[in-house]
Image (tube, rainbow, N blue to C red; front, side, top):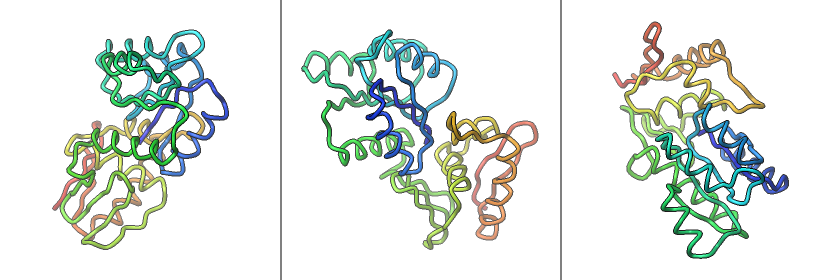
Length: 221
């Protein structure tokens, strides 16, 4: 999944980035409200981890603008503002979850997993496509019950296809879904990794169908 961390404390931002990358996510950082609003307006993310006490534009205003654009990016507010009124206002403005600082790392990771499972909408966070299963929380894939061991980029692209269900996904969407600003993926690289992934899945009856001029769709049979 692609996650934006909006945090003006550089040490905390680096820690969150390291944690989320270790879990296999593509992570970008914004350090102020104006920057966060601009990035969220231009890019697509699965989750935003949003501090409220930001320089310039306040985090609540970033959240308000996000929802005003009818953007359904999941938002986990992570802030030192722990008063009941602050929590209620954040949730009323459209936050999906609210965690106060200081926080426990294990709880933060569990809340991120829960929000991403909810975004996928699968029962228990496990998506099945024929004999292929993908556990969103653990990012583990199986074929006919056996573990499917994939290099990181192929696993990233498989996840991006699986969580979008039967929808056709463009090359640009796939590139955006698994890229971060410091680790981009080009459309030509998407084609290369898709070719490798296709060779591993097709013998088991899983097709990555390429629709000319449109994109890719994952199918069973």
